[in-house]
Amino acid sequence: MPHDHHDHLSPSGHPYRPDDDQPLTYWQQMEIAVRELLIEKGVTTAQEINAQIDAMDARSPANGAAVVARAWTDPAFRNALLADASAATRDMGFDIGPMRLIALENTADVHNVVVCTLCSCYPRNLLGLPPDWYKSRAYRSRTVKEPRKVLAEFGLDLPAATKVRVHDSTADMRYIVIPRRPEGTEGWDAAALAALVTRDSMIGTGVAKDPQPA
Image (cartoon, rainbow, N blue to C red):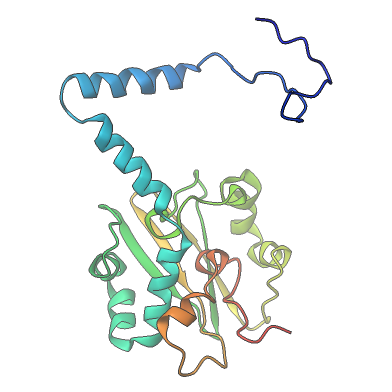
């Protein structure tokens, strides 16, 4: 049935929009074919695939924030995290897979920032999906060449005496930055502290929130 509505309104009061149906791409067809073959051979089930998709969608920076907040409040955990972040986060119940996770602690003298110069390697199990700018060619190339300038564009102006260290993620090695704990949070519990931890602060392009905004 043709839809020759042009700019007229639909019965619901919204303007008609053209259908956005497009032919499947080669890779979409391959994904469907492989998925259906795996199900047909009994390797997996549609329910298991859906459960994995739901688990991936549930990942968010809140996971990483919980790790950071515990590191701020639990000295023994902080030491374990810096020694072996993979094991420490698994002990918190986060499944990070077989990759090696490295925790980088920011200090008054050193600021860490993470990039993936090859593509978009990122600790998704702890931070969710990477932001679009993290995957951009500009961020991937410029962060290595001029990190201070890139950080300034994010609104992060570091003192000249602070050393900036750039860390390149790989397919089997990822990083999480432990930002500096904000002043004025003495006595705060882990839940309250976690609310101050931003996604960008765990990449190194930002800092934790000010507990007393102006």
